[in-house]
Image 1 (tube, one colour):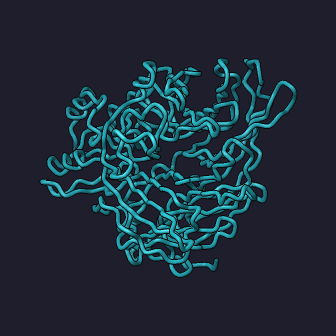
Image 2 (cartoon, helix red, strand yellow; image 1 turned 90 degrees about the vertical axis):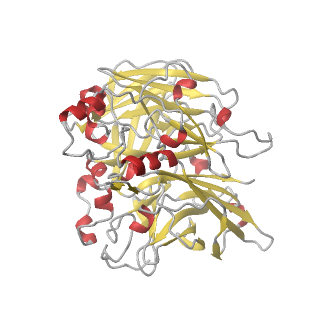
Image 3 (tube, helix red, strand yellow; image 1 turned 30 degrees about the vertical axis):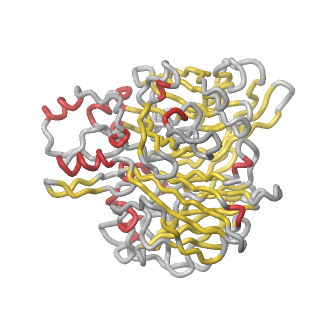
Length: 536
């Protein structure tokens, strides 16, 4: 693609997809140009922040951090036609109407958030009062802002869905965040149905926090996650829920300093919980005082990153521990294991890594919207630049347990992007490529999709030919040939900030060229994460 000059953020409106207060409850057909190959027939679900502000009786209430935007679900239904193309239908729905109404009515919200800034004029007495107010489980899903990921038919959660025929592809949608608060929605209308916690899966899963990115066994569909109970010695409980029986088993218990961990690794035989030193101050108690997670966290550059290797097939629990220099990460990319000897394997872990937690503070709306001027003001500091990094965990025992702590070996690193995804056929296997969103400095947000080659350590880009557009997480759909790893297509929702409208783009993953797009008459809010489910 040709180079595109930097854009004045004042003339490129990200506001169109950040402050959108509309939803599309009834499906509408999008205008398709080009081709959506019939093999793409299926459903793309998307979760993420919708609008961040509402009018209130006191004027206006606004969320300050992107991760706290009001949850909105999106559904793209892709239907094959007889002419070798597809029709695309779209609907969406806010998930927290009651929460938004409370903000309208009172001009304030008291619940713990990810990064909402507190009123600097708030009195000491009021802060103390909120520390002792209960903030436990809320049974009303419209008051639970689970706005990060969405999964259809998650094991252990089917009971929260509506009564549907056994033959129905979708039983229920489950929405997750990094708190132990879960919501469920109807798969077609996206209507909020129920709220739950991990404790209904297993009585020991009573901790306050969890992981928004569970891992799934690519063969059985079993789901893995962790539950974190805050305290002087934080307790991470790693668990598995069976896809066939819905029963949950705690497979490892790890006691260590509590930290904010957004994702983890899975290989054929192991779970790897990597605990980078994004620690909660006061062992988590400061969350109650700050009323948000971000101000309650502090990165410790003197601490080591800890890698706990958990046996997910047997009953051995933690079988090995490694350490590496400190870093921060949101998203793991992939992991796999390779034989090292008759009794050991090497585990390879790929991750999008940062030098510290500075990137979390760059996700405030005032920075994303770049309200203070030019896009050049948004230039990323080195600590905010996403790096693809590969680590090797050597000589992990196949049948025994290693009691000594070894060093995780850094294999390579290079600049890349965020929100990484891979060809799902290569989950827990050696993969050459991953796909991501990239900020190339042309807007104050993402402005390209990257194809990252782990062999050559290079990145190939797709971006708008004319002016920069803003893509979301790219989702890979294999083309069914079973040939090359990159034989397939990418789907991404893209904002055209010049027109204030959005489109679903389809790219050929081999060439990173556009083959089709489905255009909407309005902007679609930026989501965080998607999941695609084939109709076949």
